[in-house]
Length: 390
Image (tube, rainbow, N blue to C red; front, side, top):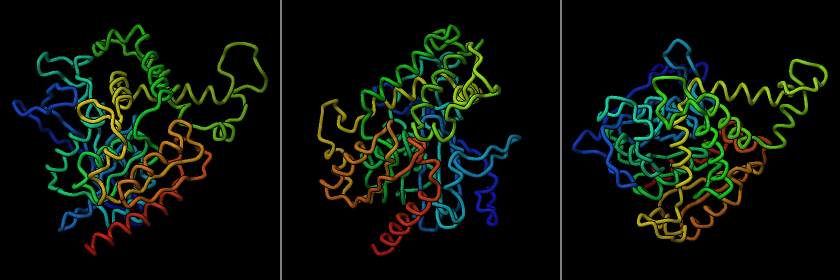
């Protein structure tokens, strides 16, 4: 990776892979199924210091991947999904920090998932791929950190599904995390969010090309996946942001056509967003990752019994938490972050929280760059200083 100090970017980056869980040492998933070998795609930015104490694990949301910052060393030179916040002088300052991001287990951007080849059949897994959970994603990431020789992370950070992984890290491996930064997330999905996920999955199921997930040798269920993405994208925005961005403007015409063509700018935007998504994402991964989010519930223990949220964080008293929510986020409303803060406070954890005024809705954790840079920079510097005093 090359660093460009002048522009503040993470430079040209190369996606790497790490393979583990080779038989007979397969990873035991939360469902009880054993899976292996497993490959994770990952990228790193900045340099690991001699003490190996400056590593930050960035965790991506549903549609994200390992490419979080900089420009890929590929023909399209795609810019990372959190490039605004990772790089020299940014929120995650790569002059000081070593930032890691991996594509989740079950993903479709280089990590083992339903589109990967099943060693048993020589064909893509499809629905033969085992159902995975947020906890399984974290277990896979733990193996990656062991491979990189990192015993303890300075921080784990992520928004939405990335925030769920950050919370799971703090619950599962508090001794390996100094700080946890969950953004615009929840400790368990609400029935409303599960319902929205299911509507998206149904759009894929009902695409004739889906063929019970066995579509890799023919037409793909692009219509179903595009519709699922359109539904999801509406939930990432807010009424205010849609009003500001689109209003009731017409697209490519001055007057109503009194027909069923795409007329409004918001309709055109959703159609474009859905179509673009099908060119980079796998429909089966969409099913698996949304199901993993549905299953996520820190108020359930390993045996499936209900427990107070405080129990999940009982071992995390020494972890620094920075919990961020956004007032216009109706997908993961602020009260869900406040529940996390309350539980952390009750167990005596060092917790800072912020409920930010923003019109951007759930997407605010990606778009409120200036605010996030200020808040995250201050918090991470404090964690670094406390670490030096230990």
